[in-house]
Length: 117
Image 1: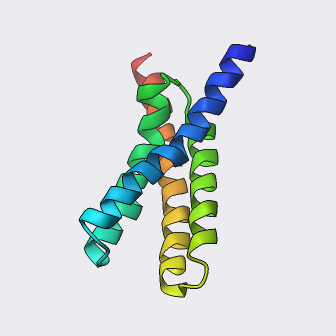
Image 2: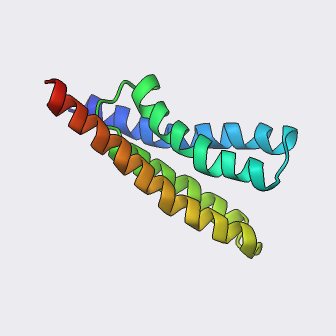
């Protein structure tokens, strides 16, 4: 049980780390315009927050890890850009949307398991 909790903690903390690792080169290489912001905040972030626990840590139910990891990442980013209200509004919207996306991904997996199993 203790080993499982440590794995969940690692999985949770790996999510914001992976997002930061993707954010830095994305920011420097591509830059920020409306299209790149939408791709990053609405496509890459939910994808990473779902794939890190499932593919790297082999978690079967990564909803808690994904939500906590997303919250940590958004809290850190919000703290960093608090003065820039346009970006802050976009990030708050993307946070809510990404939570819903993670929820629906997990719901879809649950429904598919019940239908198949």
